[in-house]
Length: 598
Image 1 (cartoon, one colour):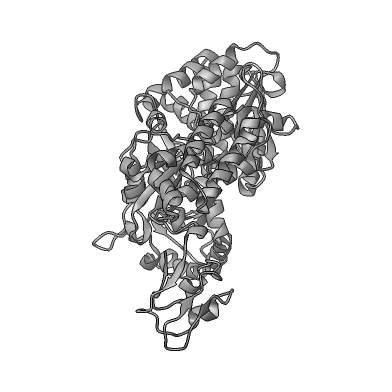
Image 2: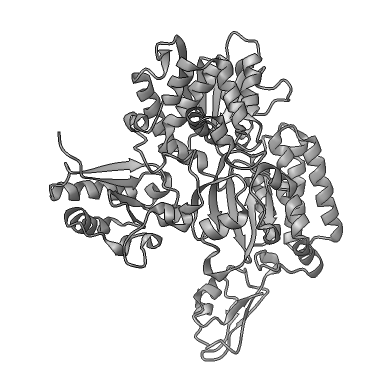
């Protein structure tokens, strides 16, 4: 048997794949073969490492060298210098791993990883997601074996209840309680479902778990099925996640081959199998009853509750539905115990939460932190702060269903109750950071455009109400709003919240309400002064040329698509505001900073 002396872990998640990691892996295979190292060095294509801003990522063990922004042309140097001669290529290292004495330190010592605690993401970037044996090597399916051979169904449910785990899909409902209701429900057939639809703009937590550790979800669903008395499960995943779908299919087939899905699992008489259902990208199918309706082959629309799915769900049978991240916690809770999990986080929000950190932030990517970690710690320590020296203005949590948290509340602990108290919500875990250049009225308008487009139309409050909200916001961003419109906005928001059929409609006004509450002066500036303080809303923005800085080079005039700029060479040029379409091409072209946005 050949001795492997090193491992090269290459990120095969969607982010790095889109940046060319597949070509890097192919080049690595070719270079290793060329130097006769293909038997000594093993290449492993993993899931996401989390630090997406530095992709494509490659980590070489046993040294633990973390190479970032790797290009195909860098591979030959890594093979020649590091893998052949033992000299780490320091120019390609993630600079935070380089110590003062020019050595390298562990990733866990860097700012991005130091405050994280990876439970749901424990295997992402660590194992080959397409190899079940690697999952088994890190205690995979140990929890399933334990519950089937050592625990009663009641014991499993009590463990999940005692852990304090709450749903990570947005609602935050106690997971164990949901299982308890389904366990107690009468029915000759019960189902277990997984919500992997993940429709929030900017959210990619569930996708990354499925790409990097699909077996953890399969194992957890089997545990849930045993607990409630189900023998069939469905994973509902959007078709726009091809890598996640492919790895799920591979993992399900491997689990069947190993007898971990199917009949008589672990020789206990327990039967359970899984099927994948592809969603077409409808945001409303993130709502549990709409998702189940879609699995049944019908148009994805929410149903009135009660009855709740635990009693009457899929095909009117008792059903539980949890999202990917919730399931990813289950095997660890079983293996390490409810008390261990409950010791992490806050009194009412136990464990950790995964966030997709995006927007105006240096370290975009996936982060997993204990509940109660402050927004400041996530943005400044883990996220590395705001790029280009700009000031932090707000953070949006919960996607279109969430709210904007202002800079004045940056020390807010991130947990279910704290976010709800300030008018936001945990949601599935999207965290969009905004700086001083963002217009909060425009942000509210952006999310309403999404909600209007994605409304299923079943109930009038959502179908009509969100459309009226968007019309008011559009009117305000065009400089045509009145102070009375602000009162109408607020009144309409509360009407929709109180009357919409499902949770998605009820939370659709949150971005408007939170920005009205914390950034009302921006709304008033749009209405009263007819200006956009952030210079974002085109109708309230103008480009002007500073005659003191203009060199008369005519470059701006030549770039203008509407002939709105005129002047003589070596003399200041002028913009005709009646012709200007506010595209910004002139400002981008000017080399002297003479064109200002006002």
